[in-house]
Structure formats: C-alpha cells, structure tokens
Image (cartoon, rainbow, N blue to C red; front, side, top):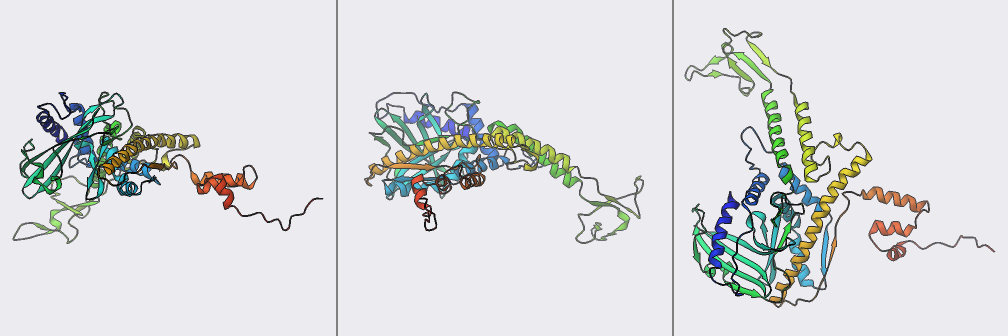
Length: 468
C-alpha cells in the first residue's frame, strides 16, 4: 500500500505545482501515469523482494527465491562487465564511481521492474541519485515508452521532522524543465500527507536548489529510466516495467508453502519419547515435573493410565519415517517452473543433477538464460548511454571542461559459451593446422590478428634445410 498511497500524495502535489501555467507557458493537465493495478503490483514486488509476501505466516516461511532470482540476473548481467569513457577524463572518473554499484542497482531494477538515475552537481562532482521503482512516478511518455516527465521525491529525516522534496522533471521543446517543492511534517506523523510546504533553504542540502529551472539546449531528459525488457501484460499501456519474477509469483508462493511443509515435516517427525508422568519427580513447591536437565525437548510427558499404547517400562519412543524425499521432489519441480518463467537455465535454483540430460537440452536451457540476460544488457547499455549524456550536460553547466567523449562497453557471453572448451578446441585445430595459430592467440587474449602475430615467437630457421 505504500506506493499506492504515495501516488495519491504526488497527484495532489502536481495539481498544486501546476495550478497556474508552468514556466514554459503551457497549460497541460498532468498526472502520474501509473494505474492502480500497476501500483498494487509494484507494492507486491517490493513486499516479495523484502520477504514480506502477503502469504507468509508462522507456518509458511520465505525461501528468499525472489531476491535470489534478482540477484542472479544482476550477477549474470554484470559479470566481467567493463565500460570506459575516453576523451573526457573527469567524466570517466565520475562514471566509474557510479559503476561501482551497478550490480546492486540492476538487482533492484530486476526485482521491482525498473530503476531511475538522476545526475546532479555536488561540491565539484557529478553525483547520481538512484531512485527505485517504488519511489519513481512517471508523468509523461512517448510512443516508444520513453519517459519524458517524472516526479522524483527525496526524503530526509532530521530530529523530530521528516522533510520531503518533490522534484519534477519534464523534457520539453524548450529544454529540461525542473521544479522543486519542499514539505515538512513530524517524524511520528503517520498520516497520508507530506505535511506543510516550506522553503527549499530550510535544509543545507537543498539551499542551492531553485524552485524553477529551465535547461535549454538538451536533446533528451536529464534523468534515466532503466526498464526491464519483458512485455507488460499487467498494463500494456504503461511505461513501467515488470519484475523479472512477475510471471513466477504464483510459483514462488507455492515454493514458500512447500518449504513450510518440509520444515513442518522435520519438526513433526522429530525424535521424542512419550513417557508416563510417574517416571519423573514432581517439584513439591511448584507441582511441575522435573525432566532430565538438557533433555526437556526429548521427553513428552503424559498419563498412560487408561490409554492403550504399546509402551515399555512406562515410555514409548516417537520416531516416524520422514517423507522428505517426496517433498523435496515437489519443491524441485516448482523451482523448475520458476526458472522457466523467469528465463533462468534449469539447475540455477533447482537440483542440477535432475536436469539437462542431453547436450541439446543443456544448450536450449542456457540459450534461454542468455537471451534474457542479453535483453537486460541491451537495456542497461541504452540507459548508461543516456546517463553519460546527462552527466556530460551537468559537466557543461558546472563549467568543468566538458570535452567530447567516446564510450566503450564489454559484456560477458560465457553464459552460453564455455570459453575454456572453445579455446581448447581452437588450440587443437591450430596444432593440427586446420586454422592459423594467430586466430587462436587473438581469441585467447582478446587482441587483433596483427597484435597476435607480434606476440608469436619468431620462427627459428637455423636448422632448416634449404632445397636446391
């Protein structure tokens, strides 16, 4: 409900922001373009990711599968990832600082469907605000599902007050329009309100911000929205992305419930001894039975009088057979469903010994995972291109020597290609003369054929016999 409640507050603030014509003299009715259905969905993503799914209780425990799926995709997407800006050393330094947290940010995006990046100037640096999906409110988008206007709130708690800044961005024909409003309420106020409007300079962090700004000469928004690439079958008209585990939510619920059954099976079949009360001393002061110290969990006392039970010397061991194998088989089948619906290779979550029996099955399973990862990589690279441009614009605004730049990207493809086996095969072909040796050197060390030739040892001709 948190995201849904925030949307209603943001809608009220937008109406206050645009009660008059905006600074580019355009009277347009603005609203958050997130349907109630999508708002509920984002709240659900957040709850599941944080192990607070609505179906969890004292008997149904979380397996943490949703977070594991998001984490695994973030790992696969960024493993051996490299990117560098050339021609602009300052911009590259700021960019590399942002990339340090890229894997974590992609995990948040995978879990909640998307994530927003907003660069800004701060003490001679270009910092990047990271706004998760449950704190990002799109207002306008085009036919390509590119978000052109959005609200990006920021919260700061100081002492007994909570301060909220509403920052509105809109890309227009005149440039990037940025509006700021600040609000304050008591920290213990749980009402659906941002509180009373206050001046921006109430906090040191916001004192340099302008209520209204127009940045001209830009060709795209100065904020970036990274959306997960799967189609939105919840609201096809929405620019909001779906969680990487969206289609597997019913199966995640089944997995949690099945895990609860497994835990109960172990707890319910735990070894115990049902013993007659007459076997133990009774504390005269309290009337409680005295069980052997350290063995209280083992003994279960009862009055055998009148009970037909096969007991020996006043006790009966309780040790039923555990049905864990069939229960784990059921869980494993559920995990395979989650892998398939999330686009993971079989064996990522499920037992790898029970899957991929043939080379073709292995290839198809890895190809599915590779396709999903490649789609996320493509979306991430587009978002990074956009982010670098926005950082470059702020570099120009801050008079930090914004020279032109080039960007390089390197993504790993080892998900579907076994690099060691491929290199071994190439080495054998080169040894047998089926391919030129410099091709193998170039592939192994990631260099050009010309560089590979330079790396190869010179041919020793001292003992070669010259033909007449």
